[in-house]
Image (cartoon, rainbow, N blue to C red; front, top):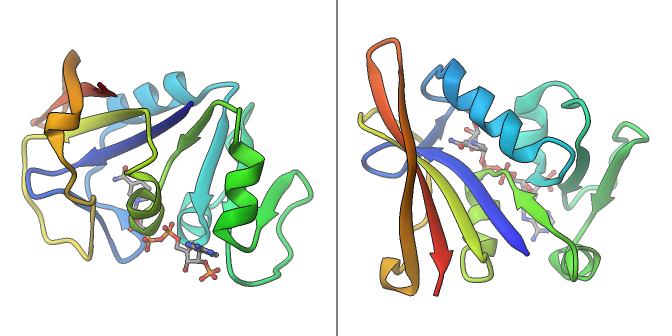
Length: 156
Ligand SMILES: NC(=O)c1ccc[n+]([C@@H]2O[C@H](COP(=O)([O-])OP(=O)(O)OC[C@H]3O[C@@H](n4cnc5c(N)ncnc54)[C@H](OP(=O)(O)O)[C@@H]3O)[C@@H](O)[C@H]2O)c1
């Protein structure tokens, strides 16, 4: 099962200057709960942006370069090898934009935190056909006056 998890603005804003746009501690807590003890799959920019290994999660990073990553990080250099690895596994695609784009058509579930705000951005979540999914509202929260909704899109 492939799950995508992302926090997006009203115009699908994802990030700016290889960082998150909004500082939303309660959403980070939600991200932690959802991904705890799971395999998290990310593009190299997102790995750099994290700046550290997140405890109790298996990290899988996609990069074209054969670079030295920490020993406990699993590295793939092409999408085909990554797809073979995740086949029959439960994984969370945690970003960034290039990864969402490559996995949106395969994902079974999208955990989208829909933020009720707009902002300048340089990366966006891809447009997708919402009619292919059932949408559930899992909850709402807010941080620093920014409201957001935890949604789950399950492929029909
Ligand atoms: N709002 C959210 O929920 C959220 C979540 C995650 C990230 N973000 C934001 O998204 C932004 C990063 O997104 P991004 O699209 O720039 O980067 P990204 O998807 O994190 O990483 C892109 C990199 O992944 C590697 N890659 C991607 N596809 C590949 C393939 N098919 N084969 C081999 N390598 C591949 C390449 O690495 P190399 O260049 O090393 O070859 C590529 O440059 C940041 O602003 C971050 O803060 C937001």
